[in-house]
Image (cartoon, rainbow, N blue to C red; front, side, top):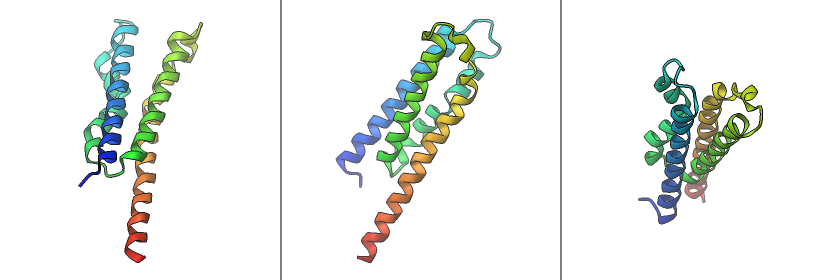
Length: 129
């Protein structure tokens, strides 16, 4: 059974995923050109990390580690937005949106994996002593 802290960190990680998804939707549908080919496809690609976190996040046993990954992924989202849309002449940095979703997915996946390894180590330590 989940502790109260685990439920809160899981809920916070999912709230960050919703915020990231909203920012991705805003960038794709409000800020980019309406002439872009397949805007929904680009949205799904840009939101793959957030969709994965929303899909499997409620079932992950290591919510604290995933929360760290979600915060880092949201920070990368904010940096990408700032580089492209807020910085003068930022369109030169638009390529960040090609690799950002994969980097976010890697951040969340690495955080989950590290948390899972720590969780297994604590289980082993509890069992042996």
